[in-house]
Amino acid sequence: PYYQAMDVHVLASLSETTSLSTLEAMSCGLPVLATPVGYIKEYIKDLNNGILIKKQDSYFLYRKLEFLMQDSQLRKELGENARQTVVKKFSWEHTVESILKVFDELTADLKG
Image (tube, rainbow, N blue to C red):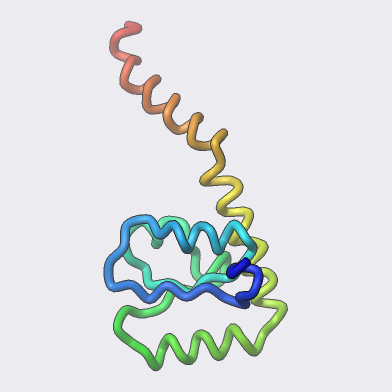
């Protein structure tokens, strides 16, 4: 119920691996403001499915959050793109395909 009450998800971490809360927010169609740390920078694309913010710069965070809150259409577009990112990159089908690809690469030498 918490994600449905939110307009935007903010993750201002100094270090992170893969943020589960960010992926959950994205799957709920929320736009994300996040620092480009860890694996986050691999799936948040600035002004496509979220907004990347500078680490340890609270004024920059404030300005980006204000910018996003003043543009409901942009929030909607970023949120829709965020959801599609999770559906495509983090589905079970995609995960299985990725694992099978690794197995194929590892066993390619054995096959000849």
